[in-house]
Image 1 (cartoon, helix red, strand yellow):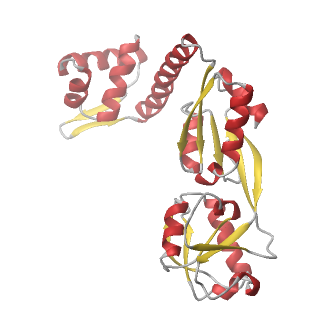
Image 2: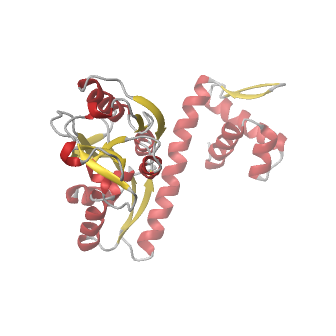
Image 3: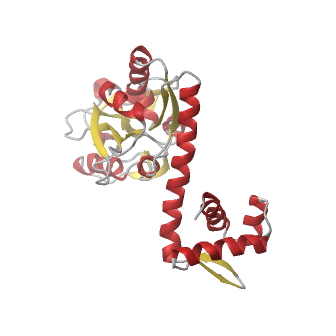
Length: 288
């Protein structure tokens, strides 16, 4: 088995079409078919099912694709690491984060990183909780900032910031902070919430706040982006419940009112894979 066999299989598994895969690889279709057959013979399993309608992965093919993706990504990561070292950098750290982490936690970490390890560069991506978990498991990210109750056993999680919840209303809303004592005052309003795709755990907390106040919210809109939610509130399309720290960094015609007397809070946590072999990761964990 050679590296090219893995590249050929990955292309066919992604395209599910021999003609398209062969074109992508700049080889002939019959040649590609022979290489895949040779790979299957060596492994002693069938990876692909072929018929007149197309190509499908077998159960063994689905598993093998995950392993191939991991191996090829690790090779690419190693190449990038070598380039970083050769250019005088110690290396690169790939960080995923939720938008709320960019207000306080992430800037503080990057400042510490720059002060302590100025030769470590960073690549930052704003991603949902679930995608961060998946990418860290596949070694496509080194560090993630999430709002989750738990993570898979192969990952570590450590809370880094605890936050309260606030109600977000249009700037001209008649209920002022001095008059605000419970979210039940807004039970007849439309609500704009973070989607459960953002975090199931977080979504359940919001619903719990409303249930404890004696009502089920009328949810008119959902989004995974804070700015979208605030724009909708600004335009009078409803009110929202969000982490209080999200009030920083936006210049919009909305008002934040911290919700008093509730047991719920939200935690931002950092997650990573202990078996990740990026040498920069252990240095950064200590800073976090």
